[in-house]
Image (cartoon, rainbow, N blue to C red; front, side, top):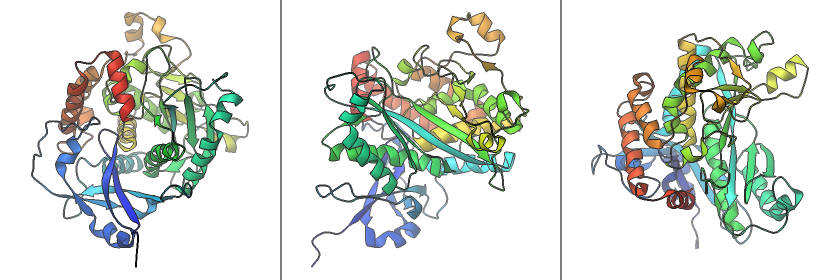
Length: 438
């Protein structure tokens, strides 16, 4: 007689960057991949604070959440913990067509556009910072062996867990901030880039619980301290799976497609940041001198730029071509990885479609320039509040046109519902509210 029945959690990364879904017996995985589990349109209006924002769906409608077996994670952290099983999936209508508010399907559409316009595929990885909640251990912390060794057991469990999740492990380090650490993984292709970001966040949280700890990926806990960013590294491969990002003759090594892609990101950055840094506290971090992003600029090895050309460690052209990548820095973990990456890829595709020239590269502090000087050089200050970011997103017809059906209005309604929960809180209250969620 069975005493337990292994369950799998079919999951979606929703508009709030929260992993939601429904569980079913592991023995039914094959059938559930085909027929899915039932889902409800109004679920998309659940904000990060568990408040249902005003939306168009009400009590009507039915959907399916279909798990993708290639994303299945089976996480066994040790004897005192149950085996965790979850798989990411796509939300469809009852006939199997992608639902217009499914973040994973939206990303697939953006990646297909990139392949069609540029003839390239995306290679990438999300780089995450997070903080342990609770007291700060004794001794020096920032980047120290002391700080690392205090969380060594956690780090080793986390690396093992990420490997179980199918990720290529890279680094684990004590970051500068209070109780702050960084974890990175190797590159993946296509939609798997965002899938792995979701897996990493959830495995990190599960590992923390196993070690009787709690972590937060919140954009910022306290403006007196540092924020937690998400840096999205990207490069391209051609149809033969060869690197297509670098050109020795291009400006700062950018190939033609890379230059146009980055130019598109910068042109539309102030209108997509509502999707990549989508919380009320995100904009406390996106300020000058926080090593984050404040202007729509491309930097060369500059950690204050919104997009940065990353360093390479070789003078061999073949190795340079494989290593060369750029990172988008105006993002945090309040965003669904699928939605954030979709917005970035669509902006890049728009740059390719418009045949934009490679942007100039800054190697200076733009915050020291006057508004007139910034405007003359084509730079804009990024939105300084989520309200402003949503207004810029909603008013940009080109950007809204990248997304299907009602998605733009649904997204704005969702975020305005989120804002209604924190509108009367002071800065400290808002930071605490988001810390508890993420």
